Image: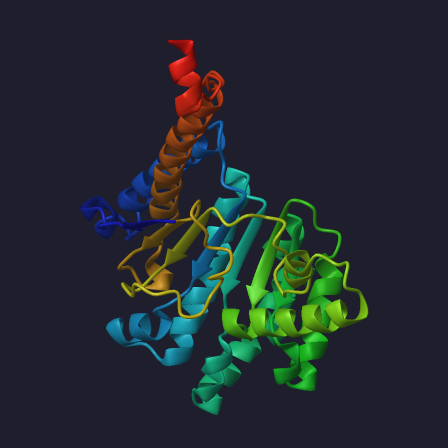
Length: 294
């Protein structure tokens, strides 16, 4: 697993306005997006730890709820960027199990986005138009019945989406995911000693591990996983900790991270290929064999 702590480009700080600067940013996005999508190597699975909505709201003197609204809108924008790059799976850390410790008012703001915003985008908005499949992964039983009903409706509306899978991880933690999977696998092993326990653990988890995690991005400057997708973050996953709050993460920055991953991936592939082209080892000789050869 490689960890990249990237530094914001000054140009990005000055291109968040309107008019000519917005046009410049759109032009940069278009160029970088084209470079990424035409590359030989495109990441299959990208994960986001969406951190910093509340601090973004405080920074801009907004209500906490407005920070979450900006975060939701930016999530849709970045999902579109992933879609046009050709990414097949995106996982977002939407709500940790530990987030239930927050005030009921703030939790309700987030739940209302599922009830209203996510449902609308799934029925008539960009999710429907671009053909994404939405999956809610986590301990669903912790949600109220009306939220569960909305989640089931959203998954039903998008079940035929083929272009990209979006895992909405809520309420989720890796520890809960693995613990539940291990318990399930242990019970299965009691009934059938011939099963592959590791495969059973993987197939019993919330997240479909058929898609390897290529890139993990965390916003807001924190350098920790916060109990998110630790199982999937193996030696081939590039982790990028960036200082921007989640609503501030731009497509330009995302493309730059992906290009960095592409360069690393290409180098790793070249090394793998060069090792595979090595000739077979010569026959091994013991010390006594060497003496006889003399």
